Length: 232
Picture 1 (tube, helix red, strand yellow):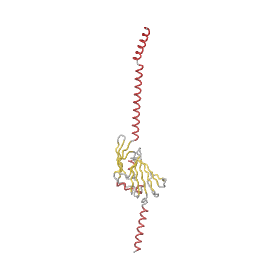
Picture 2 (cartoon, one colour):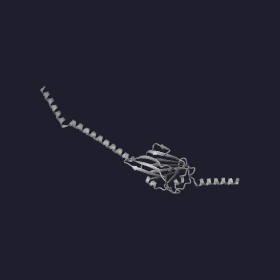
Picture 3 (tube, one colour):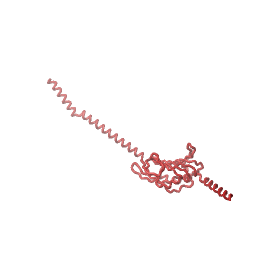
Picture 4 (cartoon, helix red, strand yellow):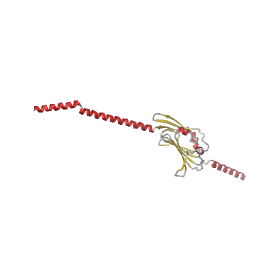
């Protein structure tokens, strides 16, 4: 009887060891940071403790942070390009463009990650944090924390639990370049109008001071003065 119990315990331990061995992401903390820049570029930085990752996607650049954790970085030109990647977060972007701004909705989606990709390898990490920073103001969100109205942070028991949320965040994105151009153009117009007004005022003062009527009036006054002096 005891031998049977020992056999069951040994088998249980063996299964646990196999699970840990075949799932290296389990028990590892993963921090996935996504930054959306003003020019539309998306910069991803993933920090984790795993050292035995095998990445077929060469767009990830690896280094080490000051704590010795593995640091992976990738740049993507736009959301359209990001949506075509086979190894990425399960995100979809909906946006509407206006004159100087756009409204953006970031949602989770059912996405079949590429086998052997980074996301597929760390999706089951038991301690994960996702951070998304936008070049605008966050209006609505499902995040656990918001930083400076621009950065949303989710603390997840597993990274793939992100798909349990529909709307991740909604934000208003401003076109910084266009706003700068409009401000500079407006400033130039205001300065130009002020300059023209100053020139017109100067011309008016000159006309009033040196007009022919004033010269004739001055001559008349001088003649009158001379006549009065002769009489005296």
